Length: 350
Image (cartoon, rainbow, N blue to C red; front, top):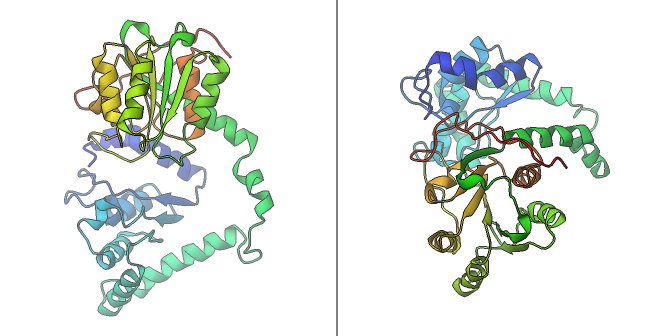
């Protein structure tokens, strides 16, 4: 739930939507977030005509496709059946229903809703026209198949990657920095622990590679949550000689105002490191709410994403190659407030 008044929405949350609409964005995805100032009933935005039609269509003037977020997510699925959620989303103004948990039920419910008059044929046809127009704009009528050899040319042009890195660099947020641990003074004496989310994940490889480039003699260990308590205990014992311990934790699961739980033996490992008295720098690559689970860390960095540019941005911030200038876009109860962020100048540009 987003508790904000109209003035706050206009000055913050709606700014990127207005800019994207001015630039002719083709599609907007809804979120399953209730915004009481827009819909007093507390209906998730995906199912709210006040949000999708009243705000997005009528007030902001968006004429493209409205795509729901996944309808199998708990924000919708916990309260409405797959069929009812589909009907309510279309009635609210959505054009594309993303990932209903039971597609057949969703289709049957929409057909029944039209037959019973809950949805009009004109409402369905309007979305069909938008979808066909979108297909026409991208040339699907002329060429339906993708040339696999050209995908990288379209998806990863150098200018897009450069812009992504600029955004990631500017987003890094420092929320605690006891004894000015960040940037690192002596990286060679630090231990780096990369806490990946599973044994097969590629996340963390960029972080490890970039650290090794800058501190080839530092102790660096890539962990996975399947490691035994014995293995993690050995890693903790080895880290006891380090000053400080840098733990880069990947937490891609969404969490709102709650504790973010690390899997496997990671919580026990971090708790033991904190209990040893060694300074611990924790980097949350993904959800910033990880801080709630480990409030005793000496320094805390948030990147808000697990994408490779954020891995590099975290390393650059640690080594003082970029200024740390991010501001917290949320409140982490008991740890930091919206707008917090310790500002640090770069000390050793790459």
